[in-house]
Image 1 (cartoon, rainbow, N blue to C red):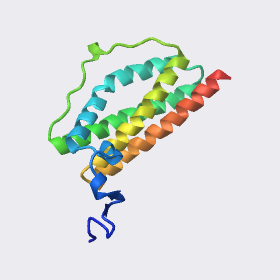
Image 2: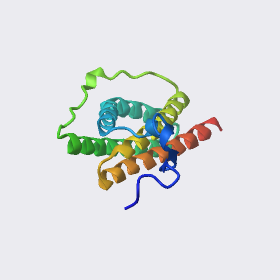
Image 3: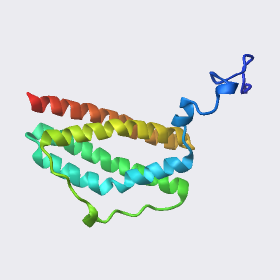
Length: 166
């Protein structure tokens, strides 16, 4: 084991006197905040499902439909993972959202792709912060799988947007 401070008074690269209110403190969140973030992500499940069904129906070709269907299926898997983690940590099972409460905003195919891309870019930061709060390596790995899928999805949206502009 090593001492928390090295001989120069630094705690993991930060001086002792400047340790509070650093950038690190914004990145490291509590497990309770991570659970709240997971709960919010699960609440968006039905909205995401309806969004993808609409987006897939607008896709111009079978290749695009296949790509979007795979992303949709990944999102369903992510939701199951998040529910597993939440219930494993909190002991509570999250309820499903009522389907009647979902409102779909109509937009063009390109607008919907851009919206999905930007949402995934924001999700990267959210999942990175959640991952840092996970209490076990198993849960850390599960969040990492979601995070890498979200990054892959953003690349695929980028590809579809570019392909649609040609």
